[in-house]
Length: 307
Image (cartoon, rainbow, N blue to C red):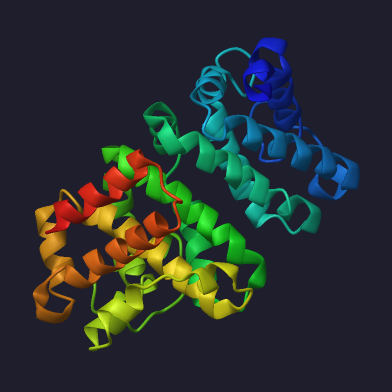
C-alpha cells in the first residue's frame, strides 16, 4: 500500500519537516515569520502536508508509531503529537484566516494519532493542560451554534478528547480537575450550582441538564442519518451533544464518587439517561456498519461500566 511506502521512502520524515518549518507557536524549529508574513503559499503547503499526514496515519499503526518516534525539533526535541497540539492551539488563536484553515487538517492528524496509540495519548497528556482544546468546545457551545466555522472542528476536538480519555487514566484525571475558569469566560446559570469543572461543563453541553428537567431521554439520545447529512445547526448540535455524552461517560467511568454526583443531577438519581445516549449512538453506528469490532466493544464495555 501507498501508506506503507511513505515511511521507507523518507516521505513521512519530509512531511514532518515541512509541517515543523511552518510552526508559528514559538517552539523548536519555529520560523521567524509572523502570521501576516506567512503568506497564502505557505498556508497551502502546510494544509496539504497535513492532509497527506492524515491519510498516512488513518488506521495505520506503523506510520503512527514512526511519527511518535520522530522529533519535532533538533536533537531530542518535543514529540510530534505534542508539537501538533501546540500548533493547533496557535492556529485557533490566530487572526490569520489562512492559518485558521489549517486547523482542521491538524486536528484530523491528532484524531488519527490518538485512535489506537496509548503512547501518543500519553505524549499529548504530558504536554498540555487541555485548556486549549476545552476552550474550542466551550466557544462552540456558548456561540449557540452561530459560529459555523467551529461546527466541523468541534467534533474533531471532541474525538481527540474521547480517544485520550478512553486510553489514558492521566488524561481523565487532568480533565476531571480542570477548572472551568481556565478555559471559559462565560457565566452559565446551569453550572452555578455545580463545581464549575470541565466535567460540569461537559454535563451541560451533553444536554443532560434538559433531561433532568423531565424531557424524553430516548429522544434526546437519538442520532439519525438525517442529522449526519444535515447542513443545519440542529443536526450538528445534536451530534456534538452526543459526543459530549460519550466523553462524559469516559470521564465518570471508574470514579464512583463522580458517578454518584453526576447521577444525582439526573431523574431518579441514576446514570440511565447518560447510558441511553451512548447506547443509542452505538446502535446507530452498528446499524450503519460504521464501527470496528474493537470500537463496538469499547462502547459496550463503557455502558456496562456505568450500570
